Amino acid sequence: MPDPMTPLAVTAYTATSAIGHGLAAQFDALQAARSGLRPNDFSSAPLDCWIGRVAGVEDAPLPASLAVWECRNNRLAWLGLNQDGFLDRVRAARQRYGTHRIALMLGTSTASIGETEAAYRRLDADGGFPADMRRPAIHAPHSLAAFVTAALELEGPCLTISTACSSSAKAFANAERLIRLGLVDAAVVGGVDTLCDSVLFGFNALELVSPQPCRPFDAARNGISIGEAAGFALLERVDIAPAAPRLLGYGEASDAHHMSTPHPDGLGAELALRDTLARAGIDADRVDYINLHGTASQKNDEVEAALVSRAFPARTRGSSTKGFTGHTLGAAGIIEATIALQAIEHGLIPGNLGGATPDAGCGPQFAWTNEQRRVDVALSNSFGFGGNNACLAFARAEFAA
Image (cartoon, rainbow, N blue to C red; front, side, top):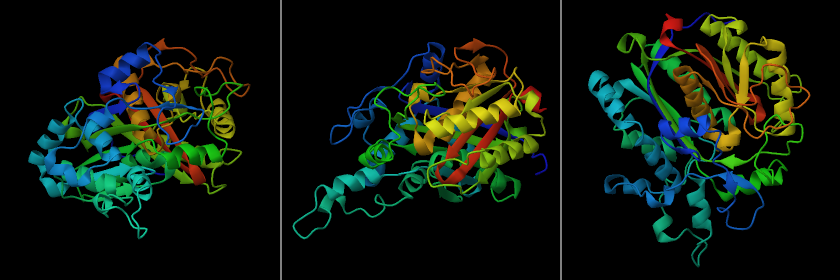
């Protein structure tokens, strides 16, 4: 087991998803139990499903100075960066540490593949991309991180993490290591994924997409609802912000059981959880809330429900919030981390929206409707394809101290 880590301060964070732009909109939707899912109006061909589409992306072009990075994914990233004063907080960190001493760690599963899809639809007579689409930097997995590092004017380590649905959760782990080793003084972490045909029709081909709004942990669940989102956080040493919430611990595991199905006994997920608690220096009974991965797929929910039932006491509360946002893929880790942080800030346990008839494997830990109670420690689970599992632990500053 790893030794307890030195906590890091989460000095700023922000989220933009189908339930709104910024943290206030997100909290309002959680408090009102209001879903952002809507019938699919995005795909290039009909597909009977519900999606979590972010409003206003098409109306938010990049500023002229960043126009070389123009694409829908980077538009969403820019929209997200402009919420909750996040750009100002990064600007202050740049002045504090210098541009070379701030890392950028971003998760994504598809980057700007939507732009590449559009280019293939417009091939010229010779079978090549049209002239306006011949922008190699956009047609690359690193497009997102390269754009954001330019937008934030950073010159430190810059990493794209693409481990499916755990991508932007793993960004926190990478950032902690760089700060602990003294390679940087702060890190911007986060993730962005936008809707595109490759994702919608790809998941549909795997028979994982529901024709109705997703129902995490419901006995009659029948698949996921895909969403899009952008989220970011700034991590610094605790002496910079003694009252800020803390990243208390993290855990990672790769069980490599199957390309798209979790280990039937949840071994990788449990390893990630155990390492998280060990780094946080706490036992499971100190956890107040868990934001569950809860995709509403058959196997994921079955395995995760069993893990929660055997690992946590009845007083711990758990819920999936994908009924609000949809499954935002590579952005799921950061979006759900911000929800865990808001649970600590506001004392709100969001209910498991969409789940009306609990699956038989769900124990007393599940919160089916909103609950108001003090949250000192909150976890966030992110479990990706191939068994790429990650878990994060956050705590209020007084608890961490």
